[in-house]
Image (cartoon, rainbow, N blue to C red; front, side, top):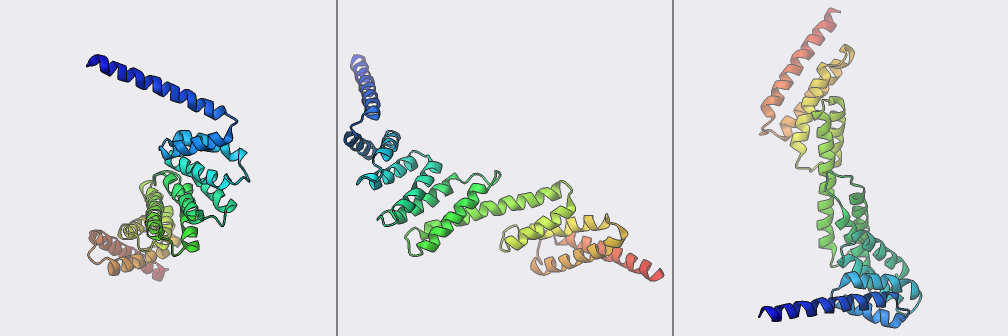
Length: 272
């Protein structure tokens, strides 16, 4: 039994080595018709890495030829299915420009956007790629509003916009955590303007009140009154919007302190 297993393993190794030699020979071959058939065979066998390299080789030779469109399409598919999303996105975008009347042009436009979506990193990293993916998905939805991919596109857009929202929120909170209270107020207000329906809205408004108060009481005398009044106004909005907030008691205490400070300032102004 062990002998039979060893023989099977040996035959498998030999077969693999022969296959590798045959593939390497095909890569160097100038018989492009045979190379095209081999590329299609590898693709259909789901050997996408080998298919990808052959299609890449064929793309230059067959440019403008009757096979050029199919090669461009399957090259993009091979890149996608090999996990080369950045290159696949570029390839599908080129496909839509080069073959605008192709039966696959809508699918290529979607896959270009999808590959950009797949390249989007964690929200903790730079979001340039995320913004590019959002733009491309939005353009697809605008160009193909009746596409069967629209529900999928909307789901991707929600996810990507959620990343941007989380990134912006954490940046704004970061100013508060580093005691940059003026910057925190500005960033948190901008966050609320950009994401009015954010699940972080309550906490953002709370931190605006808290940061605004600390910033105000440490201001110059000629600026303190105006800044305390802003805190009072922000508390009024918060109390109406989140009347059952877990932060309400703390915010009420800040409001009371603001009113007391304002009373002192107004009394001093009268005496002067």
